[in-house]
Length: 99
Image 1 (cartoon, rainbow, N blue to C red):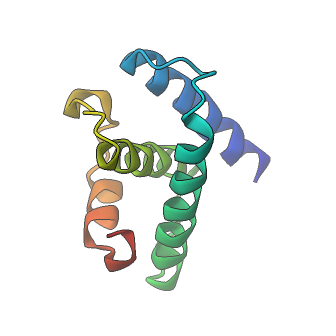
Image 2 (image 1 turned 135 degrees about the horizontal axis):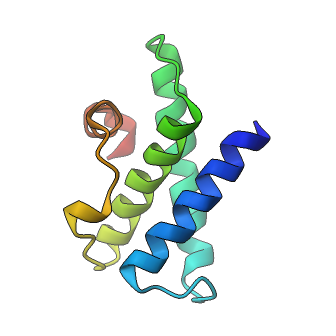
């Protein structure tokens, strides 16, 4: 589990840098809380479907969840900024819980 969190943290830092968002932005605390909630619900849905997520998949899923949260807050996330992982993107888009 530690390796999953390390992969998520590394990916998140690169993602935020790519968007030009400071890692000390005061809004990040709430956004991360919302992202974690969405991530956990989506990961649980994947587990119920018998899908197993690798460390990379978990990090990609977290970034897609973060992008979804940022989008609801008016921050546009350019598509090329997101990891190209169709299975993860599909999981999030098909998951009714994520909406």
